[in-house]
Length: 390
Image (tube, rainbow, N blue to C red):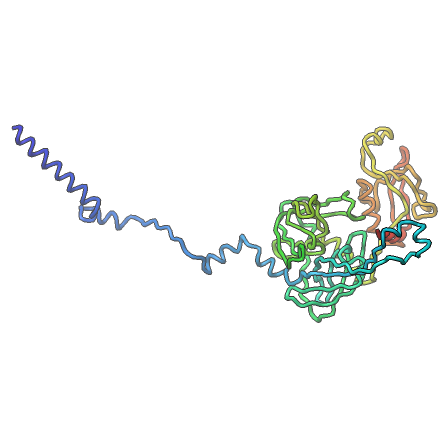
């Protein structure tokens, strides 16, 4: 009996071993296995090289169409001017008395670079005022490498904008977008010529809107972006994801001279107003009422028993100026201009500047506990005095 059990055990072990080998190496030999394997859905992972279909699918995450649309309209600007350097001894009045003012002066040529945007097929180019300020020679390099001499049509130092023109027939003008429709988080691209390396595109988002109080320009309403903007990008294009112009790159916040992720662009809504006035008249005209305004602080509002801190305190009134003739007095609080609320002195400046000289505007002021309506004949804002050369 024991011998029969041993034979059975050995036979079963061999059969199991054969079954294991067959199921592993030739599973189709087993009954039912072949049909099951053929009918089961196959799961296959295919790694393919990028083709036409893959390229089209990836385009949704790429901004190449926007860049191809806008890049031909962005130009590099090279300027030069004559700079006279004085010998250090000329700082001594006695030395100047004996040798004259011109002794030891050397004339040298200083060059700088920037960017610009073609905004009209007839050759008008929008850039920053500081890019072309005091330049006696301006050269524009197009995206295709062609170089042309440009002349200044007009400039507006208070917004740091200038308009140039080149004579080259039909030019690839950029399409204007809607900067007022921008929202924080929207994708934007900066195109320019940083450090003179050639046309460069950087990407980022809108970090903030309506930035002011930076003491960069008189009229500030900047778009803040983290798209890398470096020296040489000034005057270049800030575009949206469709390739439309939404701003003119103007300034950066930096401790090193390079991009730190805080760049500022002038909204195209502001640039368009300046552009149209310069093309039409050669300059920009703004409204003016001849007052000096002061911000309302919390202690000031408390001492004057004001209900809130909105408005602007009139700290000074120019004698015989528009506001003086209308009866405005120091200490008045300007609340509204033509029905639009004044939030602070900067908003007052913008509202008044937007009025046309010669028209009469209604200004609402608070004087003590009274609210008055004054009719002011708007004057023309004086041109800013040029800064003395160092």
